[in-house]
Length: 147
Ligand SMILES: [Mg+2]
Image (cartoon, rainbow, N blue to C red; front, side, top):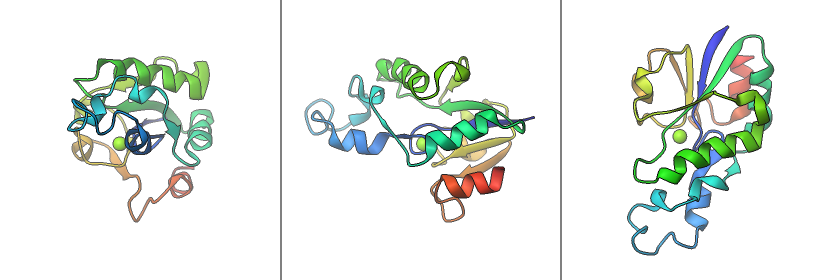
C-alpha cells in the first residue's frame, strides 16, 4: 500500500468561499488575517466531487490515506474545527488520520495531493500531485491518475 497524503483547504474543503462570505471578513481585527476568524473552519463546503473521490481512495486497496493540512497558528479553534469537520464528512473510518503541521516536507508518504506549494508541500519527498493545476484541474483527473 502506498501512503497518500491529502491536503484539506482547496482540495477537500472550500476554505476561500467560506472566508469571503463570512460576516467578519472585513471587520477589525480580521480584515488583515481573515483566516484567524474563530470557527471559520467548522462549516466549510466540500470541494466539488471531493467527498466521493476521497471515499473511493479510502476504500482502495492501493492507498493508505492521511489528511495533511496546516491550521493557522493564531487560530486555535481551526485545529479543532478540522478534526470535527473531517469526522462529519467521513465518519469513523478517518479516525487518527489527520496530521496538522506547517512542515509537510517532514511527513513521510508516497504521494501528496495539494493545491499550493506552501508549508513544505513543494519539498515533500514523494510525488506532489498539484491539485487545481493544468494537469490535475479537478478530482476526476486525480482519480483517473491514481485508480
Ligand atoms: Mg491547500
